[in-house]
Length: 188
View 1 (spheres, rainbow, N blue to C red):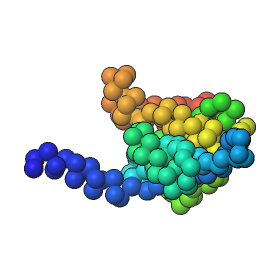
View 2 (cartoon, helix red, strand yellow):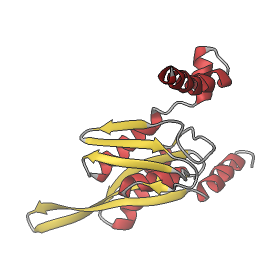
View 3 (cartoon, rainbow, N blue to C red):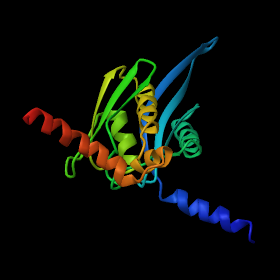
């Protein structure tokens, strides 16, 4: 019975996941008797608290393709550090193939200003304020993968401070201090 406890806890944790269907593509295979249709699905899954993943699945039926994609997305989840649990720590760009996305941190009350596949990623992640722009490919697969590449490159002040051997206040203070020094130099 002790072995079932972690499985039940994991199942309960997965039940409160947010899953967003990003795209469904109907594909055809030409065979001797005509065409055989199949479906490919792209799904984004997140917990709304900083964990998100994506997956794709292919099957003869739409429901099977979505289920396969959802299972793949749950296995592919990563933790993303968020500032104040609502926005990104800093501006970032992500590239994958021909897809290029720009994501900017935004003040409270801005909302999610992003299009299509990127919006699904941010909503599943739990980001409340962000401004994002897609440049290049509008292919949903490339946009989602580029968004994930950008999100994976985000570093929190805590991580940077730990790597440099500084206090968090020193890392954040330097960023704010550098702008004060620059403005003081301009006034003189």
